[in-house]
Image (cartoon, rainbow, N blue to C red; front, side, top):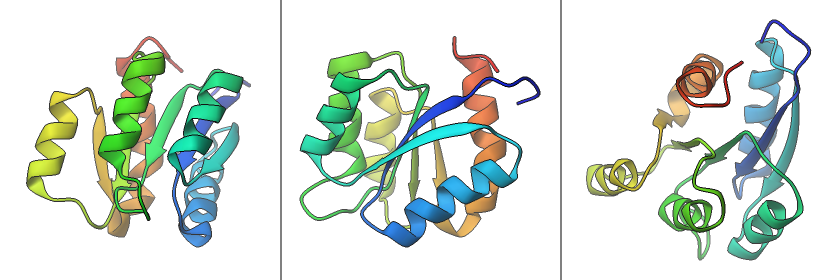
Length: 130
């Protein structure tokens, strides 16, 4: 992001390590961001009610919560926000369903260093241009 625009990101992740790593990788790539980390359905609902976000990055497997559930909440509350699944554990069937329901991209955790490039591509393809 060449200008000083601050990207507002929700990271849906139950691992503090991966949540911090996600934010660090995005910042290191030159993105200026404000992030909020949530790991439950209620925390995601609260975050989306309280503020406006540019993108949601979601793990898939969390206790009592999944990327498909997070995507459903996003679609109900603010369908125009881009959504990327960042997970090491997602089935082809779940991915297909996610893409049918508006997921914009998928980044396996083992390729998390690709995330800044994918975020930029998704945002430039949406109305949230950078």
